[in-house]
Image 1 (cartoon, rainbow, N blue to C red):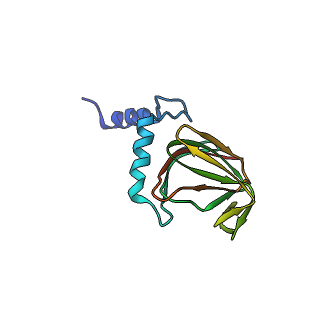
Image 2 (spheres, rainbow, N blue to C red):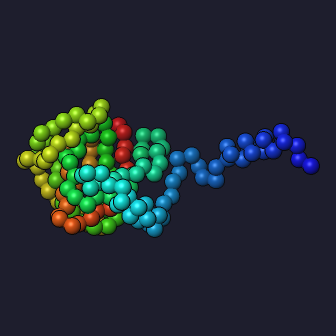
Image 3 (cartoon, rainbow, N blue to C red):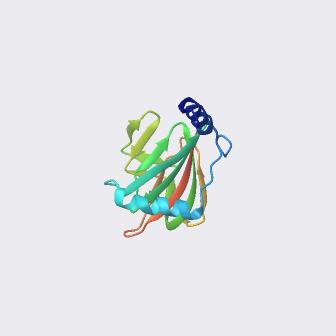
Amino acid sequence: MIKPMLLIVLAAGLAGQSSEPNGFHFWTRAELDSTANALAPKMDVHKFKSDTLASAGNHRFMVVHREATGEVEYHATEDDVIFIQSGSGTLAYGGTIVNPRNTAPNEIRGDSITGGMERKVAAGDVITIPAKLPHQMKLEQGAQLNYFAVKVTE
């Protein structure tokens, strides 16, 4: 018969063990697609929803679902690395933010960008956006966009 205290010690020891190294993460394409698709019914008024999957050091890993043009984003201390999973749209970047407003420490949002550049984006594309670069995802009416994003804090 195993004594209760021994069970507690064994359980505590097993709980501290991980089969993967600290900071290692692996998501299959099917898992990312499923997570992105599950976000659709949870969208906010901007037809946007994201979910943080994990964090490791100065990296945060997210899945994002969009069904409309987003606000302009400006991150003073975070780089974005974006992997387009499905859908298409247009990335506006650079230029000047129209109607900027602080939404959190080191974060600004705005209505649009003037004087910037635009690039079409589609499934399979990878984008890096350095900190302090205004950017905005634009979608055509009825379009959807799913992407995996890595936020890297400087």
